[in-house]
View 1: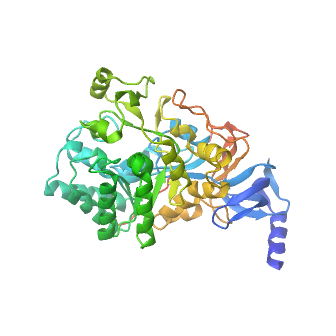
View 2: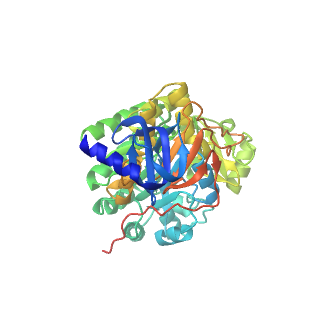
View 3: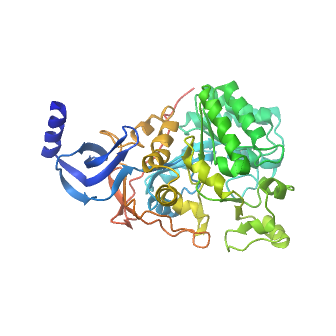
Length: 472
């Protein structure tokens, strides 16, 4: 009691940069859920207290919730256009971990001093294949030999060297889009996992197959479980619903069993019944209708919203571009969002205002539709899925994440303040860039990027999220 009184007295005597007063503070790490005042100084949380606070700027948050900023482990949109949508959806850290990058130093250098929110990247197996096979890819994934040509032992060695080089240069893990590189043998993937396992780096993996058609999603999950067991690489299975489709409950049960037996495995989902990808990718090689469980009419050309026919499918496939696939059962989405095994991640990317609404509305959708409306999960559990759990997935390999995803003294002041009665996604498939409602304040390193509900595009407080650089 004496220590609490002393802390309150010290907080009352200090002048903070920002004080958030009267908020319902929810911290998923300590389980705090109570009305408190938060003091922020020099980009860090300096006080969480009942005591009145003096500050240069005071945010009256009475009736609002203050929580850790959301961490998106699967955000392909890594430019300012996307960060503007992400910030208005409560995201303070957006990471490209599924596909990743080839040249890690160049990726970080390109964004230095230009970030609205924090960002980081994995070293990617798909971009390494693009480089090794001189693939003419127009997007994140290979579309020629990088997807469809088997690697020689010599090329596998070069690919391993690329993964290791990226990890030594501070990549946050290794990224795999195995469905987009179907010619990559199981041996090739295992060899990449071996590199990650030796360096204790997590792997973020889009599985080889999807849905219930053999070789099915369970076959693919078994490949990953075996590779992780053999190599010791911490495993994160991306977008379990869009890979599992109707098999998702079986995948989640299997992931839970593997976790219970001590395997370091996690997974994620997004709260939508449609996926999005590149039409020119190997995902749409012959047989895709049977695998995805949809035909041409279930595929939407993202640039115009038109549903495809055989003629337009063939035309646009030659051209290349993003499509939306309406293929995930609603009951699967709700069960995955509510599962204690899943984190929430957007898999989002928007280009010139076109794309999937998950790029702008994922996190508000969880809070509005799955917490408030359907009550599929509690508010505190939802916040943990979107902040603490993603931070914990990375923090052993990237220690700076220990200061994110929680509200405690000394933590980074990545803080969101939202109205739980009003927060909701507004982005739709017709208008995918409509900003989410209900986020009143979004602070990145203690700097408001959303203030009183409005984006402040004049600031760039975001920092690089990067693993320690190593020499070996």
